[in-house]
Image (cartoon, rainbow, N blue to C red; front, side, top):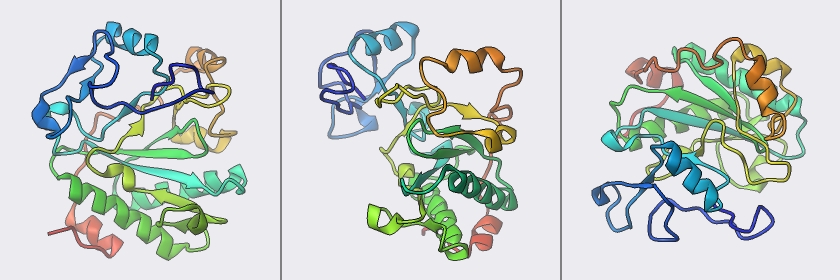
Amino acid sequence: LRAPEGIEGEQFFQKHSERMAIPHIKQLDPALDPGHARLMEIDSVDALVGAVQMGTIEFHTWGATADKIETPDLFVLDLDPDPALPWKAMLEAAQLTLSVLDELGLQAFVKTSGGKGLHLIVPLARRDGWDTVKAFAKAIAQFMTRQLPERFTATSGPKNRVGKIFIDYLRNARGASTVAAYSVRARPGLPVSVPVSREELKGLRGAQQWTVANLHQRLQALKDDPWAGYANRQKISKKMWDKLGAQPPE
């Protein structure tokens, strides 16, 4: 997300290389996104600095890497609350969703969004395609909604999440993206999306707890990697679909 005039000025997303070139950026094979200019990849410190110099504030990533772009290596459940809900409701929602993922046998990793909610990230073996992974994330969201309709919704739109938390599974579509871990957000105070361990979850004070002004304090105090084990890749199984009362797409 670029904001050449600062967060109070114009902001725009840029995934392709046709608009205002960024120094040192890597341009990917045009076959990865037919009909568009080349997708871009930041693969060096110089490219990262170049992006910042060109007004980039937020960095977003796909759910797949360029070498196997048709088989995602993760899915995301973005817990997006009604702004009127207290933070306690978000923490409870995260714990409930994590419990369901535990029951499915999936290890999830948590980060603050730097906005209003929390992101639950589930790393995957690169086996299933976009449609299957998105459908599985949707099945989890719908399962949570059936079990606790007073707390959750799987339908987007402000009217549908009044007093509830929207489990946003739509970020798992091909071409969609999620803000990267440790990315700054283009919001007042410049909050940061920060990985946390599950043990830390109950002590979180908000989705914007860390900013560019205080993140260094957290990093200096860390003794263990909050996402230890992230490299372990997991597979979606038929048993998981059955537990959710859902079927994979044909």
